[in-house]
Image (tube, rainbow over all chains, first blue to last red; front, side):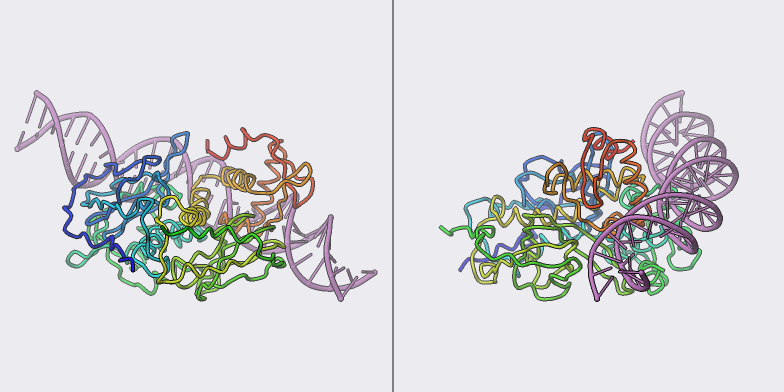
Length: 208
Length: 208
DNA sequence: CGCGTAGTTGATTGGATTCAACACGTGTGG
DNA sequence: CCACACGTGTTGAATCCAATCAACTACGCG
């Protein structure tokens, strides 16, 4: 029987550094290989004809980007912070090769995980009130951010958060401050995050 | 070589009617078969712990729902209007069987199409201003709605549109009226839609 | 004919956007 | 080493827009 190609198996692949704002791939380009985030955070971006930018999703260490469901990339990917990533050559994905059944493979899990990153945005933006939105966002990323000492690494620019949540950087700033004053989170540095009251955070994230 | 199982091939399958509000499947249930929309519109719904409801996506004639990327359904599906659908048994999807390569098959296309339905919501909600959001929504569904005589069939309840766009039914009503007064759309009946000025509609949908 | 639901419209309130100014950190050049 | 510029982040104040509540209409159904 066909042996599942573990797309996460090639751990030996060298890590490639990227500075914040660097482009990993561009929407419309032929998708030739996969990208796995090792450190830092990547963002999926959509540019409209008028040049308006929307951050559609964030990708965290362990996430795989650029699954070739289509021959061309369906979004642009950029480094949201300084990061280290890996290119995964994916010859098994070319037409003509067999593939294990959808349902319980690494591949379908990777597809689902990438898809979930996009769907999550809709569920977060769908909430009413920006306190709920930001709380839902913080709750979401907190589960994915790596810990450093006492706090989580939180190197996401405010502008990216604002675009992701379909609001302005000012509102992000104010709402984060509000969560700090409520003693729900703490931010010892601008790029550090501590969740002081997880249950309260989840409660606010759910809604009124 | 393995012969691709065309999941859209079983056109002979009988059409099953469903009344508006009927449930097709529920989030968390084991996914045993696919659903293809023949007539009418289906919606994907997420219920939060508190019972808040969010319409995550709409599915139109030709769309396939319930692809088992996971063993259990990732969302609930309901009839947004009276509809006719088809169950597609999908034994080929069970673990253990081979599968043609991702990249150019009916399956990957179906996965991508289902995914796109969810991603589209994020891109629409991400716009600023409700005129832009509603215009983007109308522009999106207009490409998928079947024509009847002079107008498009538009049997989507206002409450569903409101939930999909993360706003209130009142705002939907007002904004649609605004688009009518601008001569961009017309609605000869509550469930009929005519696009009078497609380019203007697209322009408003893009933003300022 | 009466009832219930979905849809529409109006008036008020609250909250987010916007504009503006300021604080902070970083990098550059004198 | 300091001065300066630049970008990002933060705060304040005024405006505007959407949510909310309420009343009313249209429609389908018993």
